Image (tube, rainbow, N blue to C red; front, side, top):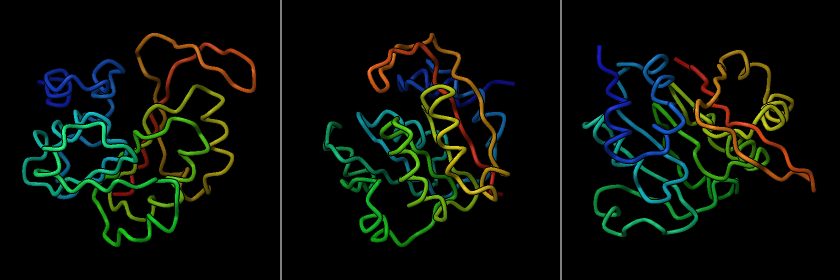
Length: 183
């Protein structure tokens, strides 16, 4: 059976293909009926276009602090130009989504703040992409409530390891993919 996530991520030039996250989306989300998506970290808009192809009938929205994407995307998608780590801005979005994907700031503190602001708005799945190695994962696990961690699965990116700076120290590690199955 063909992995539709793999094909579309490749065609849309999403880094999700490079990290081989399509394997995890296929394994966990699979063919689940998804009618609403919130993609945090729009960047160039590759993921928005991919989600539209994967779930053509879904309402797909995005969040990005910066408008790096082609502004024509705003004709196809509702994009909030806000900081996902700010609670008062998150509260202005009053709806819930079947799946929320955090592909925004990859620092664990930003991922935790975004989780705290949006996890309760996810009906079926909440995803944190690009957790920086074991250090970032352990920090998130320390602060995320146990009732949510019970629904979490963690996978490694299959891309090559990268160099990161933490508190003046250089570490070489890979990204982690964290998915919470709330369905």
